[in-house]
Figure 1 (cartoon, one colour):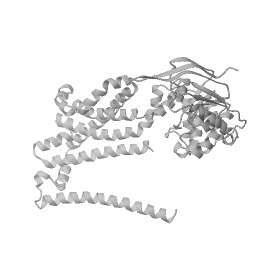
Figure 2: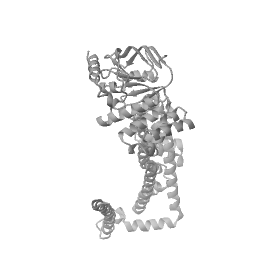
Figure 3: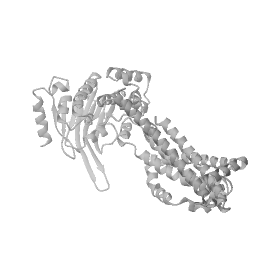
Figure 4: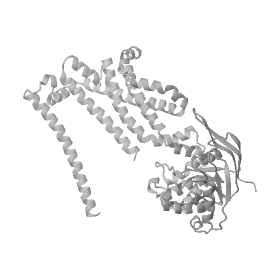
Length: 243
Length: 260
């Protein structure tokens, strides 16, 4: 099967007046349809740069990015606009891309109903809980009907318990909608519990140090944390990160 | 409602009422001191005028249509100056926000021009724009536009970069980023700039009228000073205060509606 995303030898350098910093060098990565892939690595190693490159905000200095379909980016903070209602926030990406068709509206309404925001469509974001805000941000992303979702530490701004439940909800929603995911995180447990494959980055300039398929049949992130193999995966990734 | 909540609300209402009473009392005491002071010879009414003399002067002025003419002219100048100042200031701020190159080039000019006391340009303005409405509006704009540009631009540039990133990840261009994010998120700051602008406009209008010295409240005040009719000066100032206050409250009312 043709991968929906293929990075071959991708490199990227930042330029400042003082120096040139190589953030990425020779990154190879593929994602297949329906796959959840986590990207972990030392902090500041250029994980987020990969996402910016994939969604076209940056142009790679070297290498090729092949993308089959469309991507949508979900940031660390929900970035809901306070002056818009929840519904209007979910329409934002569609408005920007001039894709706010009647079908798209129906799609958004359906997701709002289905994912627990039915009674909050006309409310402003400040009325929502942290988890609800994150769901609204997810619906705004899914409204664009992307084939691949790029998640940049989407739960790190939430407190620990909220983070576990929201992670569970969000992954169930994304799996239910049949999307693929590239998740950037510094949280090893989160990577193992949410994803089918964990890609470990080396320090700067970052490249792929190793890839580890997570073979746990259980899909629910919360239950995955109780799996007997969970600790084994954790230790292996921990070792790779600190090698 | 619990007893505590009711008690809290009662105390709050009482405090507000007390504030209002105190405010009016201060005004009355001030006026009474001024009036009585001039009557018992503590203050020279010829130099300090007095509330009753101002009232008499004001009554005399409004019986002649001339005063309303002065008042109307000043008000019109202020409205034209404010309107043009907002439009021009906003346009320049948008331009400098949209183009980083323009911003880099013109930033030092803004700083220097902001520091310059614009009244120094008075003689030049009068030669260029003539002794009339033109000069007054130009003076007003010189004073208000620079403040508008700097305030509005600071608000625009203060937009959350993460939110800009979000829009860019959707593929938004400059225009969309401005209309969907930068403008609505800067609205509260724009209103505060507008409030400052009201004050700047009045400074400009009165400066302009001092300069042109033909008609308007500023002219009346200058004229009153020259012929040593301090009653006229004080009356002019009081009317001006009422106008400026009224305009400020109009903006505050707009603020309440927009930021609801």
